[in-house]
Every structure is written in C-alpha cells, then in structure tokens.
Length: 76
Image 1: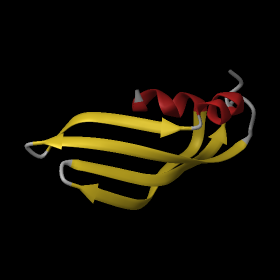
Image 2: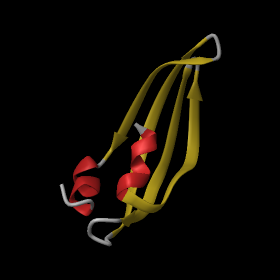
Image 3: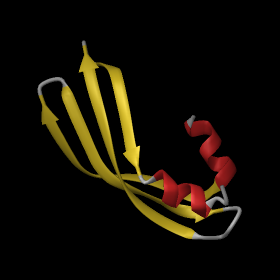
C-alpha cells in the first residue's frame, strides 16, 4: 500500500507529532503532507494510527485520516 503513494504524491511526508501508549496499544497522532501530482494541490491533513501489539509485533493497525481531502487532491 505505501509503495503506491509515490505514484500520486511529491514530497510526501508522514510526521508523527505525539505517541500515546496504554498496555498493548500505541496511538500515533500526526499529520501527512505533500503535493498531489495530478492537481498540484499542497495538502496537510491530520491522522491517527492505532497499533495493537502482541509479542512486540503489530497484530492490528488502523489508519484514520480524512480520505476525502486526500482523494480530492489527487483528482479522484
């Protein structure tokens, strides 16, 4: 999934701003920013990544972000 991102974005960065840990769950709060190749639109959008760990490995990952903003920027 992440390998295809460069197809649609220039200068894409995913920046974690804060981590919250509770037991086997880690939440990364941050923002993604970059320029959409199709439209030239510069985008900065917040995200929350929820990681559930077992034995030090990711068991489940949820990525929450405003997909409508990102889709509009790439012309979808």
